[in-house]
Length: 267
Image 1 (cartoon, rainbow, N blue to C red):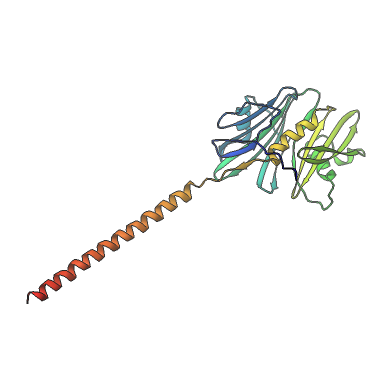
Image 2 (cartoon, rainbow, N blue to C red; image 1 turned 90 degrees about the vertical axis):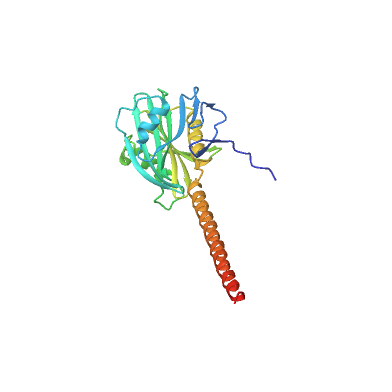
């Protein structure tokens, strides 16, 4: 039986872990995971911050960019590992997808940024509210949510599939008055992972796979056991104190009994 390849992971001192993108340049430090691909004109960053920190500000700081526009789309989505807030921005030829969630008093941020002038790529997550196995409803919902086109404006798509390391993705390609819009969708239980590309570019599947490899491969937080350690130490101290008090009480009672015996024998 063929063994599954071992996935190398980056582990942050902030307590989160993400798969290492081996074909991207690793520019991570001990706190922040940062992977860059100059050929694809893209970067993916994962960072931790305070629970009340703004995820857009965190992503901008870690990427060294300014995000001055309002998000074109934002909402919350429930996944198998919690509730994520998602925000999507257009900054000229730069397009930014930001996911964040809070856990154990920290905010974790995963951001994707690409700056290819020939294509705009967005990576939304969609709550799966339909029974059909098809990813098409999630793709069309994403296109409408991102303000690319309404459902009524979408022509019949050309459907297909593309096999990526993260899975078998369904594709739907639309011609919107000469602009090619391609959606990629992957059914992941309660959530559909979706990518929308506005413009025709052969590198889009590589971007889709890299970003979703970070999520599906996948991101997880190492649970802190410090509170339980302190609780355990406190219990040990209490037990030890009870034993000492018990021994002292026994010693005091023994001394009292000894004095009583001495008094009786002296009569």
